[in-house]
Image (cartoon, rainbow over all chains, first blue to last red):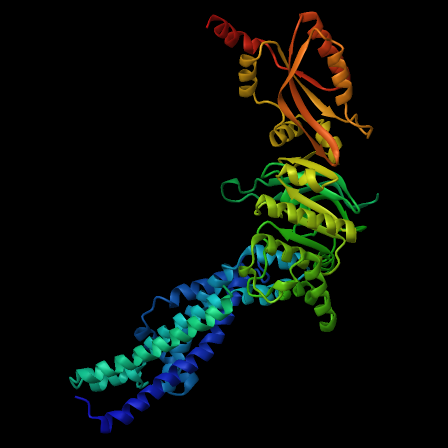
Length: 219
Length: 364
C-alpha cells in the first residue's frame, strides 16, 4: 500500500525531476535536432549546401547512434558526460546523453519532414525569384510546421521513456520511483502510481501536440 | 511585333542516371524560335516532348546546355544566380497542381512574391487587394488553399504570379487539372490578363482546345525538337510536318479513322473523299466553302452527301474537314475531285481496301 505521508512529497519530487529532465532535453535536443535535420536536408545532393561528404558523415553517425539501446548509450558516453557536466551521476548527468540521443533521432525526423515538402511548391517559390536560403526558411520549414509538431510530440514520448531509464545513474524521476519504491520493495501500488502519472504526462503532451498541429495544418 | 524571348539553337541535356550513366538525355535539341511580345503562345506536344523544359528555360529554373537564350533583351548565358533571381522575379508562373503555399492564407500567398521583391508593407496590402479583386476572389482572402476549389486555387495562382507586374506569364498545363467549365473560366481570365496588361503568356498544354481558344501563336514539339511554329491558324490549317499533321488530326479528330472509313465505305456506295475547309493561307477572305458548294452544284449528275466531319473556328477563323460520298458516272466524279483539288486539300480514301468488304456486301 501507499503511505502518502512519505510517498506524497516523494512523488512530487519525482514528477519535478522527470519534467525537468524532459523539458531541458526537449529544448536543447530539440534545437540541435532541428539544426541537424536542416543540415542533412541542405547537404543532400542538389540542395543549397550540397556536400556529399558532410551528408554521408551525418547520415552514418545517425544510423550508428540510433540503434544503441539508451541504457548502454548512457554508459557509452559516460566519460564525455563527466567532462561536460562535471559529474556522471544525477539529474543533470542524465540530461546529457538524453539530449544527444534526442538530437540524433530528431535530426532524422526533421530531415524526413523537410524532404516530404511538395517539390512543386519549392519550384513555385524559386520561380518568384526567392533565393535558396529563403526558400528553405520561408517555404520548406514553414510548410512542414504541422508534421514537425507531430514529430516533436512523438519524440517527447521517447524522451519521457529515456528519463525513466536515467534513474540508473541517479537521475531520479518517476522511473526511479517505480524501480526503487515499487519493484525493489515489492510495492506494486507504487509502480502503478508511477505508471499512471507517466501516462497522464504523455497523454497531455499528445493532446497538446495534436491541437497545435491541427491549428497549423489549416485543413 | 517584337520578340520578348528568343531561342537560338538552344539545347538542354541532362546527365544520364543509373543504367544510362554517362549517356546524356537530350530534353531539347537545337530549338530556334521567338515568342512575340504581347502574344499568347501555345507550346503543344505529347508528354515527354520537352515542353516543360522549354518553359523552365525561359525563367531560368533550368539552364541551357547549348545555344543562346535571350529573355527581355538580356542574354541568360553567363548570368550569375543573383541576376537570374532578378529575372525570375519579372516572370510569373502558374502550375497544373497550383503549387500554393498551404500554410499561408490566400492573401499571404499573393503577398509572398511582393515580399521577395522587397515591396514595403503598406504598398503590399493594397496590391494584394487589387489582385484578388482582379481574379474575382476578394471574399476568400483570409481562407486557406485547402478550403478552395480547383478553379479558385488557380485564380490565387494567377493573382500570385501577376503580383509583381511581370511582363511574361508562364502557364504549365494550368488547366489540365480542372473540369471543362472551370477551364473555360480560367482561360478567359488569362485572355483578360493578356488584353488588359499586355502580358506575354506562354502556355504549355496537351489540350488542343486551350490553343484554339486563347493562343495566337503556337509551337509544336516532339521528342525535344521544335517541329514547327507560327500563327495558330497557319500551323493548324496547313501543317507542314507529318508529325504535326498527325498530332493535329489526333486532337481535332475531324478526319475519319481507318475503322470509320471502312464502315463508311460499307454503308455508302460511291467514292469517299475528305476535304479541308479553311481560308487560303494568309488571305483572311473567308473560307472556301462557297466555292466548294458551287463546284458540287455544277455537276448535277454527281450526288454528294456529307458523311463525316466538323467545321469549327481556330483563332476566330473557320477550319475543319468534311468527308463526302460522291456517287455518279465515273468521269464526272473524277472531274469533281479534280475541281476540289484546285480549291483545297483533298484526301481520297483508297477503294482497294473496300473491294474485299464490298464483295462480301454484294453477295448478301
